[in-house]
Length: 123
Image (cartoon, rainbow, N blue to C red; front, top):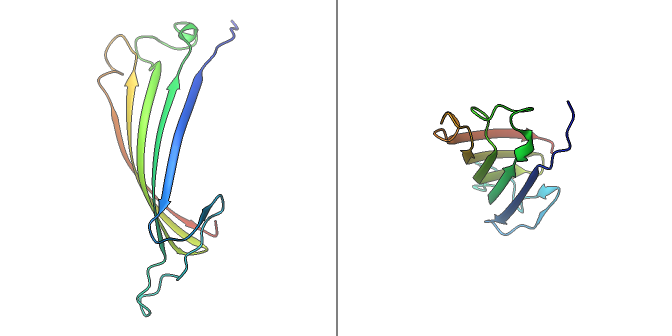
């Protein structure tokens, strides 16, 4: 069985470097690298994102189970990035996701809360 489906998704993201450095697609280069001896902490950035995904109604019931599968998800993320130097970045994010769909209630009654962390070398 084949069918042309139109799923839609979008997101809006914003970030702000708390320590004043310029942000770019390549990240942030701290004005002063992290150093306990020098009392410098690198650069800090806050980030926020909101996203939505809407699954085409024609996907149900052939390609997805309408009793258990979500037909829409909305999520919001808040994050803190710490740039220790130009090669080391640590991230901590909190994400909340709200699912719609699932007639049996298994999907609509379960929102997701996630805490994600990452240490990235030589980004």
